[in-house]
Image 1 (tube, rainbow, N blue to C red):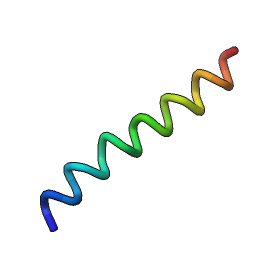
Image 2: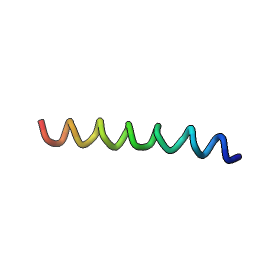
Image 3: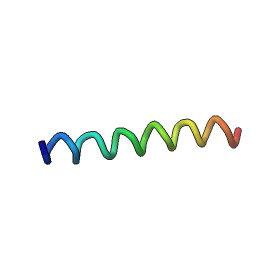
Length: 25
């Protein structure tokens, strides 16, 4: 469970970062 959380956290961060980049562009 903890391992999944650590794996999902960066995934969410990457998704938010990508969305932010598209927003700024």
